[in-house]
Image (cartoon, rainbow, N blue to C red; front, side, top):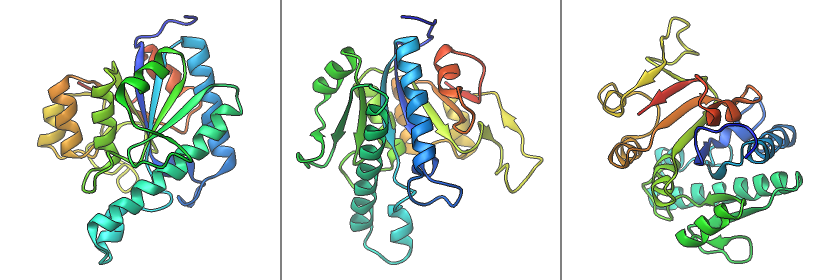
Amino acid sequence: MGETSTYSRVLLKISGEALASGGGFGIDPKTIQELAKEIKDVVTETGVELAIVVGGGNIFRGIAGSARGMDRGTADYMGMLATVINALALQDAIEKHSLETRVQSAIEMRQVAEPYIRRRAIRHLEKGRVVIFAAGTGNPYFSTDTTAALRAAEISADAILMAKNVDGVYDCDPVANPEAIKYEELAYIDVLNRSLEVMDSTAISLCMDNEIPLVVFGVGDSGNIKRAIRGEKIGTYVG
């Protein structure tokens, strides 16, 4: 291992919006290439075993479709398929940087991705491959946040790194309120009691029950993923 890493195996949660351009929709080629290069640098320089869960909000959000009158189950399945599109795009971008990658889908689609098999995922990680988990948990009514918490527990990840469009957890929306206060550190129960927008309550409860710490940080600044893996003070630590 080259540089010192606080964690040996982590799960990186990337929102779908992080792959989009300024408008928040679609996949921006420049953005995804920059993210892929950072992932390659992180894995090769720190030796960390890296799994990824990517959202689908830049293409379709199940809960938004449900709010417009669509059947919730149907809308959620559409959202899961959106995450597969993002996972394949991310795989392509990472492999262009000569890093082996596997996409595992919770919804079986053998032509484009492996089915999710826990022991196979762990074996890929041990071989230095980046594993991208797609299609959520394969069940409606569960978010990709819950997927991240579940998969992190299943692969025995040391931490979940939450790459967001804001640089940490605030007491209110920092975009709407410039006076918003940023938290440096939080307990899981504080997140639940204060209804802070870190993860949904199911995901936070899973992390709390399995003692998986979260590091919430901004994805916009180059090098932040590496800083989080090194254990530098960045964003907000939840544990």
